[in-house]
Image (cartoon, rainbow, N blue to C red; front, top):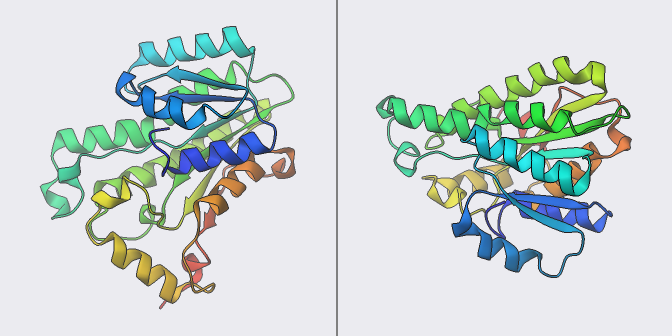
Length: 243
């Protein structure tokens, strides 16, 4: 989690209200103060530092979780990043470094996180929920390399669902409509994107953070026990429209 406008924070609030004991991961010390202030009124919450670009930090984070909590039931992967200069402009101007960073943080990170989380999930099984966007399948001008990363993330979800199904671990993703987040502000034309969604979606509106969080809770719970390897749209129905 990075800030109060993130999908991750909305998911934390809804899961906490449902009775979950939370371990919230933050990237570095620079973000700790902000996250600590957000959760100060919540009980049964633990904060753990973990930069997902570091195998050592991932290992240390899950060792700390195992020591303090014993095990886990659900992992929520709400991580995405691309360099600001790679959002907007021509896609073909994307640098090798920019591609690598976006893919490593936004897609690859799910693999080692699930591998470590699976060791802490008991034989009754558990759930993994990732966050994606329709740019994985369609071109959204300005979203650029993040669309490529989301496509990789969705395939990763399916690969992991196939691998971990025998251990009764379900892996799914939520494809959310465009939400007002700090990260979204860096995408050129984002306001226009939201306007188009509201105009063309069957529900004639944009979605809310809470609607994505509620779907996260559903996928984390036993109510979704028969669902895995699935990308669930939470986008007011926009994905069904041709024009």
